[in-house]
Length: 230
Ligand code: SAH
Image (cartoon, rainbow, N blue to C red; front, side, top):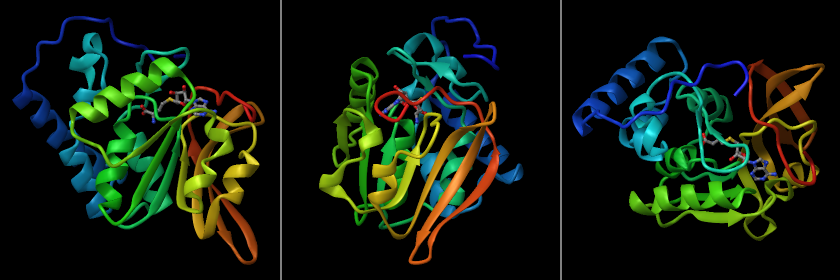
């Protein structure tokens, strides 16, 4: 993807223990850098083995701060810091009803499942059939069964399980798809990379009885949203 140098594919050599050590180091690094603050997000990142969501020939790079290619037309697994970057301002926590648009590898979905816990709900939508099956297999292999996985256009949301307390879009949108704002609960938050004046801003939206408040978090670089609102 533009903006990063993807390391060359190679047979993985690292052991489970090496990956576990890299995972703990990454969590410490994310906390030191201020990306990671809440204990539940921290626990989830310590628990979920990110290497299990990386295509075989890129697995050794699981904990590098680079996005890596995924099966499918235009999908990448985002770099490790982007998960707390999205989930901290979103205030993702125990018990939330969560919708993810852009399932990708399934890694962010697994983190969300750990964070919201059994009282919460996770619905994840992916538009690309190849990417979708990759994520579904990863999640099944790790024993995640209580996630609603949907193959389709996430811009349309998922009315069957609406309203959602938290919505996360992991592809760059020209505007927030209106169905997603409709399916957001009162007091709910939505976070998305938005294409604005030639750059991408990560924008947080909060819905209340007074309307919708927006706040720019930082510049980001994501693959474009496809489908009706892409
Ligand atoms: N969170 C993922 C990021 C994946 S990249 C991860 O870290 O693994 C963005 C993903 O959004 C891609 O898989 C792409 O296929 C998907 N996507 C793009 N447009 C979409 C749409 N309209 N609905 C659902 N998924 C979409």
